[in-house]
Image (tube, rainbow, N blue to C red; front, side):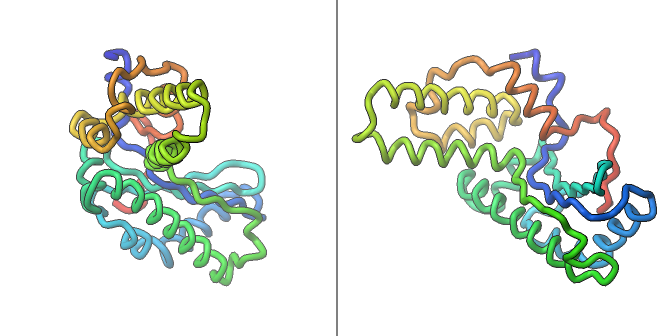
Length: 223
């Protein structure tokens, strides 16, 4: 377990609006998109989230047709505070997932109505839900399995139960200690006891996909 502690992120991505624009990858177009966000979206998109004091926002660009990722980051050490703003841990996760989807909808609507961009320039967009979406998927899988206990073969139940417990273990190791306890307390006993060791490959994927470590260089646009 200690092998992960040095790599724990300072921030977790809790949401992302992915947009692919019909623009060339130029500095001028990057400035256009960033200014459109700052003018129309920045303040209101934070208002969707109850815990804006621990929220950071970044904009990242990728080459090709101009790909833009507007990411919402939650400070890892106080993630439990942000989730706690919504009530129970489980309810907080569910509502944060919905909130970041609402942010994405708002972001896209404003870009579509921006005169220098417009909806014809948006090729595709996605609403991504970050690490909280992964936690929410665990709750969904548990709910689904519990509803099927009387209909599934015992072997299939055991396979799915073990798979869910592996996911719990993989997520648990990434969370701060105070958040770990809250996460576990809202799981049924048979999903929190006798957990397997975290899967190295999966944990490292989560760290690289959703984590932001102190040494990572990134510009937060809401500071």
